[in-house]
Amino acid sequence: MSSIHGHEVLHMMVGNQYDDASLLAAINQKFGTDAIFHTCSKFDMNAQQLIDLLKAKGKFTPTAQSGFTVDSSKICNH
Image (cartoon, rainbow, N blue to C red; front, side, top):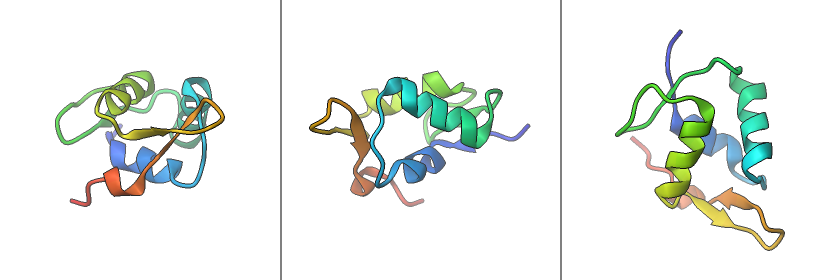
């Protein structure tokens, strides 16, 4: 199985609002529960580990409804 770059998850999030549980469900639905993810700096992550990493890196923007979205300007383009 090939690894999916975290950018794909961030692009999927643009224009949508999530909380941790709904984002995990959306990732699992789109990519499968056994998907493996990587970023520019980390490899071999499951979906929850990717969410935790993206959150820690400040990629999520809080919303008024106590969830979060992604700011497309925070998605690197390489």
